[in-house]
Image: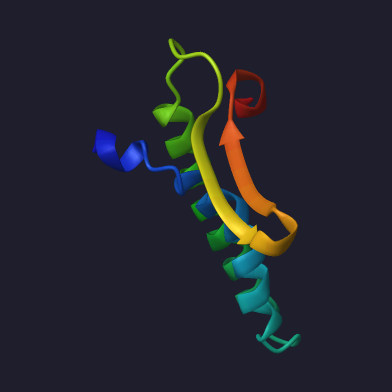
Length: 91
């Protein structure tokens, strides 16, 4: 289980879960209010669970950023997608 918690893409899953949930709910007809409510609730529960995984995988004894993920996005311009969490941003 510790290997799963140390995955660097865990932080990206946490960041993009609300966006994916919103895009899915965008295709639900607006008159289906209950589906919107329960869908938003389910997405928020998933995001909360992922935030708990990030918090439990954080090692207080290490200094610097953890769960760092770097991906070259647009090489021509030198643009990267880079995320990480430290002790301040964890809270």
